[in-house]
Length: 241
Image (cartoon, rainbow, N blue to C red; front, side, top):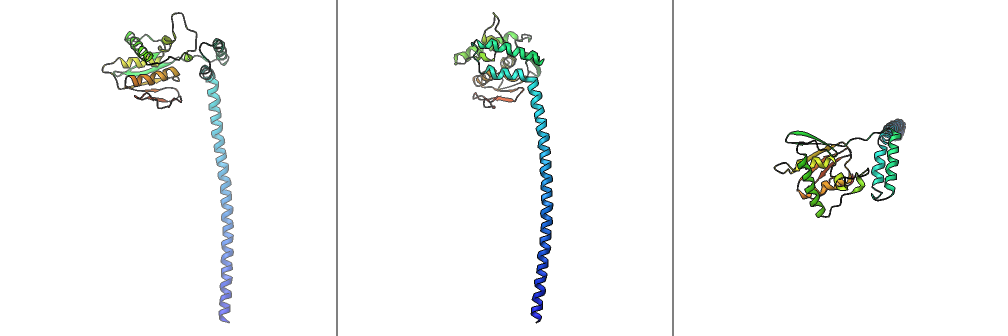
């Protein structure tokens, strides 16, 4: 009889323990679900904030740089000898006026002998200007011999009577900064240039070939990224610039 009473008491205790555990499990699940709902709301608000900020940044960029974007995209699609080229240029100039945007002057900075030197397009203000253009001429001859073709798609205006495709492209500020470094003695094994605009496609290919030709590593920081032109003729951007 005592044994039966003992077992009945143990069974009742276990039933109580199971009910106790079940109630606490339900409370835990309810708290967990509330926490999950709060976490989801926080993530949603955070994503919404990031989305709104990103959307504003994209809108601001497109508003202020749309004309430049149009040039970069469309010029890569249209041949320089096409009859549509001048029509396209006129449309872009008209669009620039509508936006009220102004042409940004390209500038390149480099350090030579501890001095910061700045170049703009077709710059001839440097004391060694004659040597700089002579060096560019030597590079041009060598690259042409190796099969390089200057890309006229990166010229966004009409050529004047005294200009050629090569003369215009070789007057880009980053090429002038490069040539100044190359005429120094001893010849540098590393050159660093900073440009305030996006590196054009012709300058990009030019830098790759010169880095290999002169076995000199060239690093250019432009408005988009850092380009490291290696002595094997490759760029760190893998041509995604």
